[in-house]
Image (cartoon, rainbow, N blue to C red):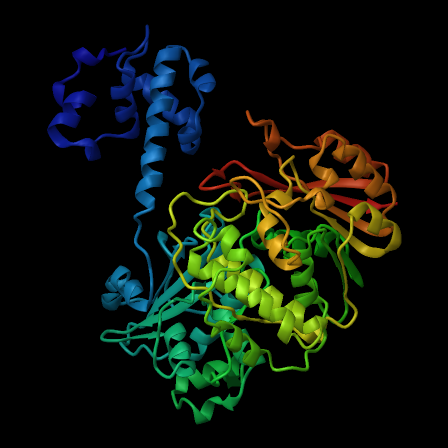
Length: 617
């Protein structure tokens, strides 16, 4: 063994660092400086090299226990290393809050300017988080763009691993002409459809020439907004390509040929099936989709995972029951003419929205006019909502308007269906301007959400809802009165009641104006407590499964791990779930890594989403 002191100074880690800087050192050299000393028979560089090789890409997640198991690493050294890693992660997270925010195609061009001079065709993806901040820029392919060569997995796999919220695809034309080719359009069509299925939408598809560029997002938004392009976010809503096209397809009013003579733009609509485009009338408003809501345990980004399991294990199905529906995104994924959706949630605020999106097959009145009327109300006086929730959960102006709109909905709604749609629009709009971290267990101390309230129109596919049934019931009572091919169960995982997290929206939906108490201004919620948050959750689950009349059962239940806060620990053990399901049929477990939202800025990066599948005997 060569001792460090016997090596030339130019080869010693500390001296190299001082002379040339950290960039010239290997990872093992940097670790050697931190460790300081070697052990008998092994110098510090050899020791650090062995550690790097042992843990590889998992080094940033190494624990004190794993390090102290290595000869020569005591508790003090292990703590020093793990503390340094933790400090790095903390500082890195803070820096990422100041990441590059991509507001429009111009920001994309500044990040991909190098593509102008490329002699070959490049396909580059920008992976974006929920704040529209850049997570990573990655070259996906080099060479001729061909839909048969560019597989969606190459685009979306990095997005899944990075927990991206959306993707911007950038492609260059070495010819210098940024006009989209037929192959460009085919590739984009394929990626847009895949993004909707996977849950990571394509935000824009940009083609770069030598002097100009072509942004599909800009072209379309220019056309429908009279050449007033506003970027990737409007009224607090991210406008991805799939949603734009769907809005156009559903609410089209004039033919593309009469609006825009741009060859590439018209060809795009003909080729991917959107023959017409939407122009906003005086009464129309923007749209929102069922998944555009913050909600604990939301499964939107796992829909592809769930669908793959059902496709593989269940075959052709005619009915699907989402018995703990929440926002209803899982049921919506399977909603079609061929499949009846049975959707249930105990919260009235969720039930209203489930009725609006999945429970109606027609609406006879002009919603646009009423939504515009509600948006234009001038709320200057206090009301029940502003007195209780103004300057806490909402700005005073927004709280006054929410209360006034809620009163007005009861007056102007033509029937129960229309009332549900208007209330659903108010709930989604309210959630968007709330001064919270995503739920209503508490509000932020600083009022940093000053965006004005604006109701949007829900995008509803009425044609698929003919046979659907929507319930507001206790799941264990409902299960005795229904049957289905597939029963999907996504109950609460711990003792944190959803009625605590969404008491305010429940209050707004019911509008009984109850007395509210405490700092969090909560009403009495004893009538909407879930059994699955209590100590006897396992017994409730067993009762549910015993009484289920179905062919297939899928149970979503996360590994919440052990927490110092007892409220966060899982109420039903894996053994209990497996034993209960095995009494019903054969069981398989599917797992997927998932970065799950909990509260505030807290994320469990090691979370595993599990689906317990049971083929009923």
